[in-house]
Length: 415
Image 1 (cartoon, rainbow, N blue to C red):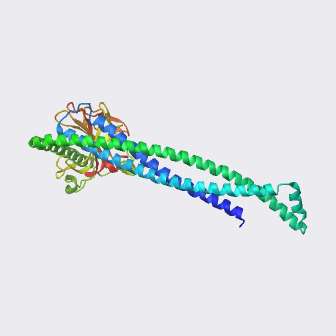
Image 2 (cartoon, rainbow, N blue to C red; image 1 turned 180 degrees about the horizontal axis):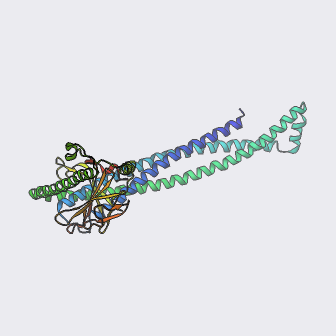
Image 3 (cartoon, rainbow, N blue to C red; image 1 turned 30 degrees about the vertical axis):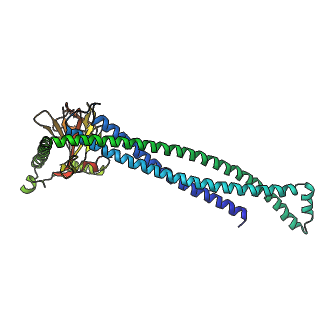
C-alpha cells in the first residue's frame, strides 16, 4: 500500500477510536450527573416534606426517621460525587496523554513539512522541473515523473492541512482540559460541603439519640403504639380484600372451596373483562404511575431497621410516601372502587380493584369516590392527611394480588 494511503488510514482509525472512547466517557458522566441531580432533588424534598418548618416539630421518633432518611441519601450523594470526580480524573489523565501525543505528532509534522519546503525551494525553478522531465529516458518515465511531481505537491498541501488540523485539535483539547479541571474543582467543593452537612446531620442525630436514651420508656411506648396502629390498619385492609373476594365470587355464581374462600389463599374468580384488565395491569409492572403527583418514598416495603436501635426490626407491608400539604391521592391504573375505608379518628382510605390486583391508598382526610365507581389512571381519590403536630403529609400505599402482598417498589416507576 502507498505510504500516503497508509498514513490516511491510520489517521482515520485514530479519530474513530478517540471518538468511541470519548462517547463512552461522556455517557457515563451523564448517567452520574443524572443520579447526582436526582439525589440532590431528593434531599431538597426531604427537607421540604419531612422537615416541614425551619423549626423541626413533632416527636423525637418522627425526627429520627427523617434524619435517618436524609443521612442515607446524603451518603449516596457523596458516593456518586466521588464516582464523578474519579471519572473526571480518568478523563483528565486521558486528555493529558492525548495532548502529549498530539504535540509529538505536531512536531513531527512540522519537521517533515519544513524538510519538504526546503527541498521544494531547492527545486522550485521551472527550469529545474523541466530538466527533470526532459532528462527522462522514455515517454513512460517522463509521464511517471510528472505524476510524482503532482503527488508530491498534493502531499505537501495535505501535510500543511494536517498541521492546521492538529493545531486545532491541540487547542480544543487544552480548552476541554481547562473545563474539566473547573468541573473537578466544583465537584470537590460540593463534596466537601456535603460532608460538612452530613456531619451536622449526624451530630443532630446523636443529640436526638441522647434524648431518646434519657426517655427510653417513652420511645418504646411510642414505637409500640405506632406498630399497633399499623397492624390494625394492615389487618383491616387484608380483611376487606378477603371479604371482597368471597362476595365477588358468590355474586358471580361460581364458588371455590371453603378453604380458599376464607384464608390468605383466597382468589378472585375473574370474568373475561377482569382477566384482560389484570393482564394490562401486570404488563405495566415497573411503569405504573405514582399514587401522588409528587413526593418521595419515606419508608420502603419490607423489613427495615430501627433508627435508634438497629437490632430492632420493623415490618412495613406497603410503602410510605411523603408529599406536600393539600396533595390528592390518585389512581395508579384504571379499575373499580372496591372499598372506602374509614377508621375511628377520621383517617380514610380507598381500595381499587384492577382485575385481581388491589391498590390501597390510606391516610386520607377526605374521599371523593364511592364503592363501585369506575376510575381511570390519575383520577383523584381524596386529599392526603397532614399531621397537625409535625406538619408531615404521608400517604400509605399498599399493593396486593388477590390476598398476596406485593412490593410496590417493583411496580411503581422509580419508586
